[in-house]
Image (cartoon, rainbow, N blue to C red; front, side, top):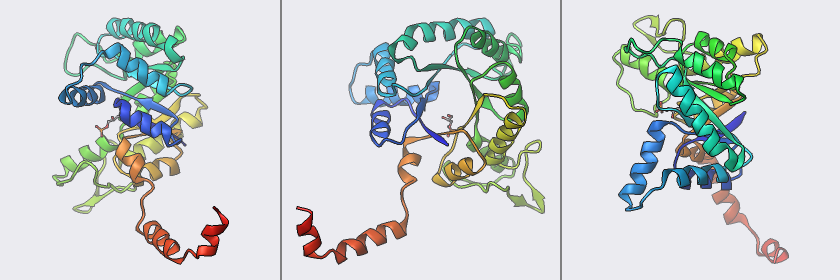
Length: 273
Ligand code: G3P
């Protein structure tokens, strides 16, 4: 499984690439806002074009998703082309993030505008990451439209299931991949019993029909979910910086290094000088 960093924070992206474990970057408007707010709060003046250029250079050789902000098919296509023309020449690693269905409750936007934008951009050779996927059937249509990637949002399905059941939870709290029983009933959203189950079903459908589209397990909030995304065959997990960092932690690893350190004999250290 490839590991992407889900961040628009240049410092986090630099660090994750320096660790040598990062295979790509995903951004979205909320992540860009978070990064921009942090820099502004630190008194920095931000040149957005220069900032994105730097992200692309740090990630050179690996894909970076940049998201559109328009909602109509025409708007998304125009922005997608512009983003690609502006930024792909930097390091040839840009893909365009398109919401699978930008309709909301706005009747001016059709439920297929995301799919139309995906297929139009894909036909022009622009790789698309089709995002905000909450069902395998959305993933299937996105793949048919030519998406290079689909991004099921695992954590947000877990949020939905817990919210509907009236369960209090923190954003990074673990939700069982095999589902949660409440009042003798398994929580589910139209046959999806957890975020990881959503990822599994998307992978199964796309692999069964041999699509080239890769599944990016997104909205993962803790290391156990990253593990489970790997176990269900996600091609990629996009992870917040904090989750990548926490994946290495275990109390017995800390205890073990403590014990080994106490047992080092001077002759061994001398030999290595
Ligand atoms: O890549 C999607 C991700 O940024 C959303 O994460 O935790 O806000 O649901 P989250």
